Image 1 (cartoon, rainbow, N blue to C red):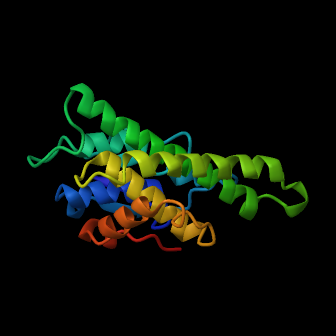
Image 2: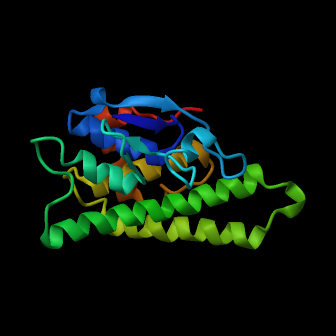
Image 3: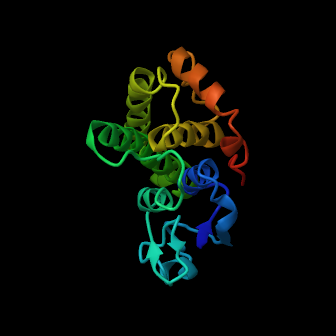
Length: 202
């Protein structure tokens, strides 16, 4: 399998953390690329028309995207504990926590694009604040639903990667002081080998 890859992408990180947790990371070849919402990398577009990463090319030539699809596919390839329960309320609990984390990441990426890629004279402060508000309300929900858990599944992986991205790209955003249980949870889960091996860079 070959994965369009950037060490700074939190969505790529989510895939790789799950791959490490399931023992499949060594079977994934990385394809370095430069995904951008402005200057699209055509090497990605050839396989994923949105030009976004991650995209996974299977051995038979089929391409899977986005991170949620790829993670669920990888979870079918091992014989250990499933990161996505097969059915019932537990499955939808995992999927909901993953959606919460991905929603936070979507807002964080839009906020970064607004502050880093948009010309300063075109900056829209109210729109930027709206994205930051989404981040904070998502963090509040994580404090309620994630911090009390000690298991490992795709929802927890997604939340850990979302928090890691905040620390990476928004180091001045103090999310910890008003969410002590979430901060403690994140400190603990960050010590796992899978999270350590995939620390964002760039």
